[in-house]
Length: 140
Image 1 (cartoon, rainbow, N blue to C red):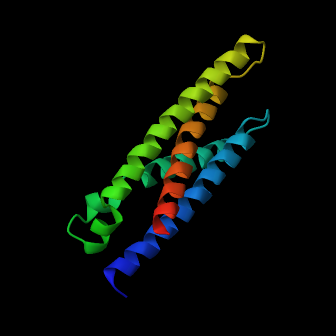
Image 2: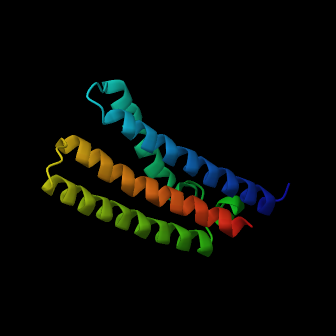
């Protein structure tokens, strides 16, 4: 198997993994919004969100800068997709914060921790899904 084939396979697996982590983060956040939340589910949510954020970073390029596969996994199109997805994540969290502020103004009550969880999950999940979809589209 050549380095190009290996990089394409890893790129597809990374994209599918980001989609799964995004769905898991949103599901765990939904479990945390109820009145009977446990520290275990809150820790799972935090771990999934931290893992998702790390997966958006170019870790391969930092750990193995001279690897041919790492260089193929971090080419210009991937860097542009990462930049665009992080921008979309920022706007996702900003729009979510504005919607929550409007909802709180109309009488909805949320705890500060729940608001922080919703905004953080919206930002990271939207960035992950955008990056995964851009990578899958580029893989075609």
